[in-house]
Length: 138
Image (cartoon, rainbow, N blue to C red; front, top):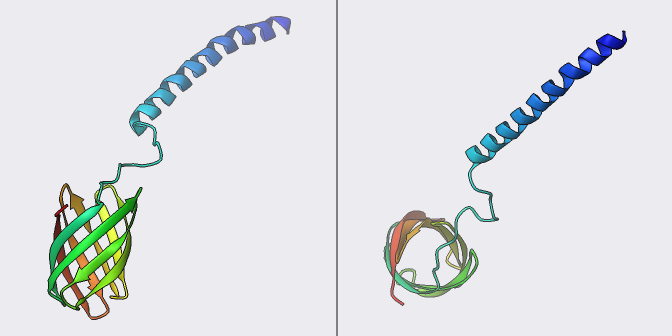
């Protein structure tokens, strides 16, 4: 019986060593397949502070001016619409190239994408929606 236990120990060491090598190789492949470690943000947000001018069409049509303040991905500011005429507070966010914001008091929500000094998308109101686009002026 002693000989059998000794024989099993000899076999166990190479098997365990092979399993350890296989585990290290496979975990490296999994890390390589997963890509770089996530550092908290998939993509850096674009910078939007400043003034923007644009147009909108659809249920409402006209021009607008935006003034953004940005803290990380959060947006605050104001929008001045030609119709319905007025200046309204804005809150929103930008993540990567995606932007969403809402005009408090006007009842409008905006979604879209930003590319450099331009952005565009769609808006919704209780009375309908449409498209919008803007460019940075300062």
